[in-house]
Length: 194
Image (cartoon, rainbow, N blue to C red):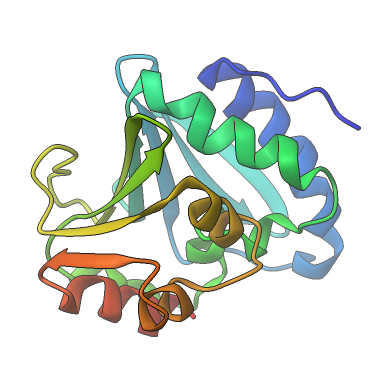
């Protein structure tokens, strides 16, 4: 099993490309309709895109961003590294909710995502700690602390989503995700990215 770095720069520049290699054949010759940006507090921001089946990584957020994912440095390891450690090589990256789904949508869906206004934050209960990761469509201003919609769940359920074992809608229908705020934003995102 691959050693998973717990530093954001190493995670995004080294580990993610290694994981991407497992799905490279299925994306041969394909290019994404934009980029996905991951920001970890003050540690940095990385944008990903697929160009002719190859994963490209750039520093910062690009103009064609489809989705932005923001997390604090404190919450990065529990929410990203832990999911990667648990999944091992069993889960393809494109199955993971916060991974590469945005990179596999066509131009029409990418534009629909970019047009969605607001920020959705997962508020994940991890023992006594409350972890946060936000998702903001397009070039909107991320609101990690004051999202337009909060999806509150337990760490086990969040990890199951990350591992592709369950989709957020299933958790919401079973009462395992509490939706607070504008529920239309996550509904619109799940409708486009499903």
